[in-house]
Structures are given as C-alpha cells and as structure tokens.
Image (cartoon, rainbow, N blue to C red; front, side):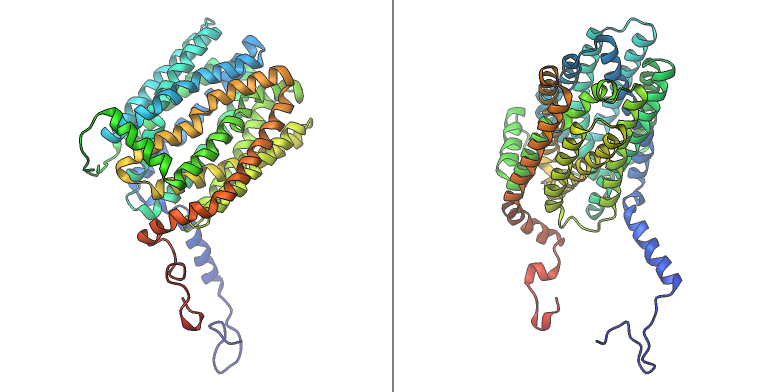
Length: 455
C-alpha cells in the first residue's frame, strides 16, 4: 500500500527523524498550554495558583476544626450547609448583576471580602475564642461572597481569553490549577494542624488573597459592549431561567450535575470521619486522602488540556460521571488506607473530567448576553445543591454510618450517568448547529463524505 511514508525510487520507507519527533512532542505540549499566551490569563493563573492553596488549606482546616470541637457528623453537614445555602439562594440574582456590572471589579470586591473572612476566622481560632457558632456565621458569610464570585469568575474567563478557540484549554488549565492546589493545600494543612492548630491555615489563606487581588488589578481587560434593553431584575431573572430551562444541552448537563452535587460531592464533608474512625488515622490521613483526590483530579484536568476540540465531551461526561460513582462505592467499601487512597484517585479523576467537560461545553455554546445568568445556574447546580447534600449526608451518616452513605451516593451518581447517556442524542442534535456556525465541526460531519471517500 503506497502512501506518503514511502520514498520513490529506492523503495525504502522514510523514518521520522529524532528532531521531527521532538518537534511534534513539543508542539503537543505547547498546544496543551496555549491559553497562557493571553497576558490576562497568565496573571490570573499566577495569582490564583497561590490563593487556591490557601483556600484548600482553609477547607480542610474548617472540617477538622468542626470535628475537633464537636465530634459530630451532623454538625459537619450543618456547617457545610450554612456555607453553601447562601449561594443557592442568591446566585440567580448575582448572575443578573454579573451581566450588568464590570466583572473584573466584581471579582476584586469578592476576593477582598473573602480575605477579610479568612483573617477573622484566623484571629478567632488563634486567640482560642472560636466556637461552632462563629464558624457557622463566617461560613455563611463566605457563602454570600461565593454567590457573586463563582458566576463572576466563570463569566470573566471568556474576557481573559479573547480567542474563543482557547476557551476549553483555559478551563482545563484552570481546573488543573485548582487541583494542583487541592493536592498541595490539604497536605500542608494536615501537617500544619498536626504541629500547631487550624488558625495558622486560616491566616495563610487570608494573606494568599493578596496575590489574586494584585493579579486582577494588573489586568487590562477589553469589556465587550452587549446591547440589551434595560429591564428590571425580575424580567432578566425570568429570561435567564427560560433560556436555561428550554435549551436542551444546558438543561440536561445542569440536571445531571445537580444530582451529582446533591448526592456525590458531599462525601468530602464526611472525610474527617473516614480518616479518624474508618481508617483510624488523624490530620495526616485526612490530608493524604484529600491529596489523593486532588491528584486524580489533576490528571483528569491535564488530559483535558491536551484536547484540541470540544467534540466528544458529551460522551466523556457520561463515562466520567460513572467513574466518579464507582470510585465512591469503592471508597465506601474500603477499610484499608492504600485502597482508600486508590479509590480517591479514581473518584477525583472522574469528578474533574465531568466537571471540566460540562463547563467547556456550556461556556462554548452559551449566548454572551446571558453568560452571567447561565453561570449563576451552573453555580447553583455545582455548589448550590451541595448544602442540601451535605445536610443529607450528615444525617445519613449519623443514622447509617459514613461508609454506607457514600456507597448509596455513589450508586445514585451511576444512575445519573446512565440517564444522561439516554439524553445524549437530543443534546448533540441541539449543539451541532451551534458548532457548525462556529466552525468547530469537521467538514465531513457538516457536508458528509465526498465521492471517493475524501472529506
């Protein structure tokens, strides 16, 4: 069979030179980081990489502090509920404001307020005056901040990366950054808590916000002018809800991840119980488990960063969600430290592949004038449902035990993945016209194969 690999005359096959192989590999590597060619995104990654480590330290330290003060699975769920229910209630209104306001300024304010919250928690803990009531109040304050910060951050991403073709890569890099912090932060927190107390984690988190605030202030962002009628907030809320509820791809993706957020994600709330009671460890064990989950998620995000197209992400959502559910079931069944670590790797990988894939699809197809409102419902699906899940998980763990709770939650996630698979044909039918208009679909998908089999 002849082809470009064969030379003429001599009849010998041409072998790719080592230099060509090196250039090809280098090209793939540079492709995986192509979104970093945008200066604003470079600044964002630099600031967030520092700040997110502090954020994960605070998450681990808060859970361990609550468990140390109360020893209650129910209160672990209650604190998580208090920290996330404001996001559920306020995110739709926040989405309207994100569409109306300068997103860069919104993020500067939210990050500043989050810094104040962390420093207040540090002062109370280091002075020995922290109580469960203070933790509940400050967790609720962080929930209010997140209601504006999360949709603002997601909607601002498209302004930092001017070339829409780099958007999926930027989302994957952002996910990689989050999970690198998830890998480092819990490990640092576990070691720091073991030798001192949780207050130092909160203090480091508060100081780390200075990096992301500085990066936001250094950006030069060209804000696009979106023409739309000036209407009341209620009318814009209705427009956003109508768009989300009637557009099949967004409705289906958010429905799946609302279920996953309700039943799957809250296993993190129960992690102190697994570390202390199931695996008979301490803060180090807690940190290692969180780090294992972060490692799996980081691998998943890096693999997505290497992708060249959004095509095929719908199927990846189905598979990755099922993998996440299987990891949870395995973790619930395990009573061995190394097996539990392995199951956390699997769960983290599946969770991140599904989250980043769904974010990429939504950010690619959403109408720009509704981006803030759509990302607010994205926030509700991924974060806003979590308080109910945390409360449910805490209650179930109180009555039935943490292992059985996680096993049942994993089974529910797998059922959700199966349902999403049945909806994939309708999702693809709605997305393909948008992909054709954007030039994402290859020629053979749009026009079919030409005579002779060449596209």
